[in-house]
Length: 162
Image (cartoon, rainbow, N blue to C red; front, side, top):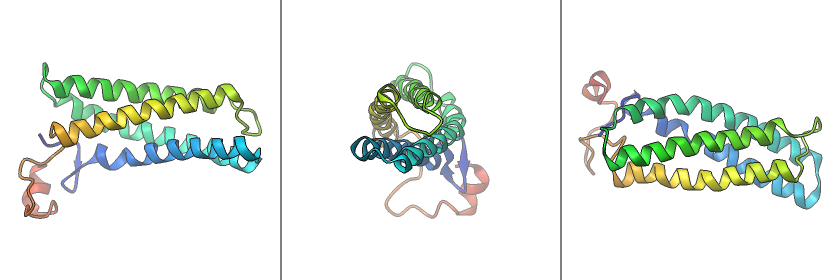
């Protein structure tokens, strides 16, 4: 089942999710570095990575929703997609809590790190669910996919939205 929201023959949601996943995960890494070394620079880096990750998540979400709406009701894919999307909303909310509750100097306290670490743990589950949707259930995969499929830039695919 190919994705409904496509750009140049590829699913938009799958293109965009790498940004919030990478930015939010890296923010947690910088929080850990901050914990170890108490460097204000690392706290600021984490803070701004969370900001960018939240924006990326808000940008990716509508395209995921459009694709989810195209999944037939009553299927395993619809249930997995619901858990994936709902879990990612929770991830964004947890990181938003961490972001908005930080001090003026960007330094996270224990509570703010707990929110972002919980968000990161849930993101690992929702990323796996996204992989399940694509790799196991074929959501977002072109019906003509094969080892020798023509380029997605083939005029037929781009014009027809396939």
